[in-house]
Image (cartoon, rainbow, N blue to C red; front, top):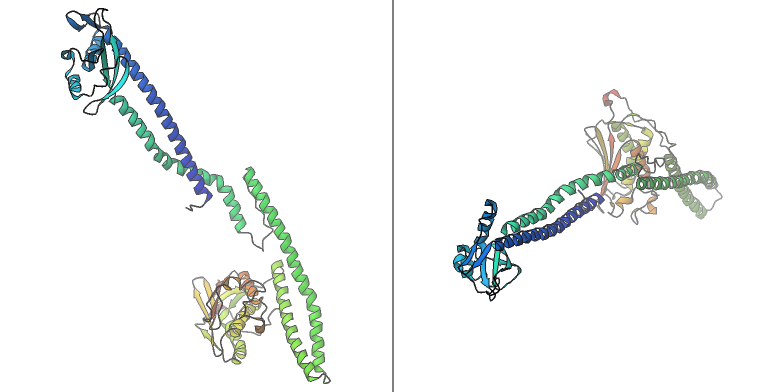
Length: 486
């Protein structure tokens, strides 16, 4: 799960929005329910208090309740209210404590009703010593005009309602994490469904390279955003294809046009050198010109080869090829070049390994690698050639102990016309096309190339190919004198 992905952000935003919205709605509902419940509680308390007062009697003998004409339910209601009432005069003095229940007498003794006793009307809250919350309503008691006024304060425990409200609030607050736990996976799934067309477009786009720019993205999704993205991408690929075709045509045409004048110049220089009338200083210039013309010819040939490879006009003749005799033949040829600098070429662990390949092109790739290894090795150094098989693949490694390649140059050594400066300079004769050609040859043989190198510690080039299904013993593959394609 990538925390920077759009799917992750959409999932969390969706989940948080749902949780916040539902929690907010819950809090609003809680406030509304709390308000309505308190209003209903007060209305019931007021009705009961009025009912209680209506059945109180005042006489010279004292106070009492008339319950003869009440049914059993109303009588029980009156008796229930007698447990939580206080009778006071206008000054808040308690009257007839003997009529009060023990619980109310205790509350009076604790002084928790001090603020309530002076009330003549309305509602007020009182908290008992045990923490119980009571809601009281104050009413005047009807009495004859010649008697002093009295007031009744009737209460009821508020804790059951407060407990229900608190439970409701607790459930709603704790529902937010549960909503997150449910809504985020649901949002993850929905975001994945919504982004699936874009992932399909991305997978198709990743498969498009310079070799298959004729590929276009086709989607079955009809969403406007998806169709717009697909159309824009296909249009961009079309423009890239046109640009690549123009570039490839230019490279091929330029290489073709340069081959003829270069051949003419090379021939004229060779004819001039055969003349005995040419002074020695001019002869040295002509020799230098021939070397440069030969170098330019190789560059043009390589450019033409790569241009034809890009255009798909190069056809490889694939057949089973045993690498062991091929390498032995190539190493024998390159030892003559290595002797000039006392460089030793060592064949290590050479075994029969058969691959499906075009021998001409494989030979050219290996010659380029061996030539590079000799060029950039130290005098009296060692070039090691090794072949190893592992399962269904064969690895061919060419290692030198030369100047190596810096970390900055490694990502670019297969780029065309790229040369590391100053070590891989013009003086070495390279034009920066050899490794690009090697990479193309390896990839055309369904393989890949790896490079490991550090400055002053040499470089190792590994060519990895799939093994052929044919056994080496069934093949008769001699070294043969084969020409290298140009």
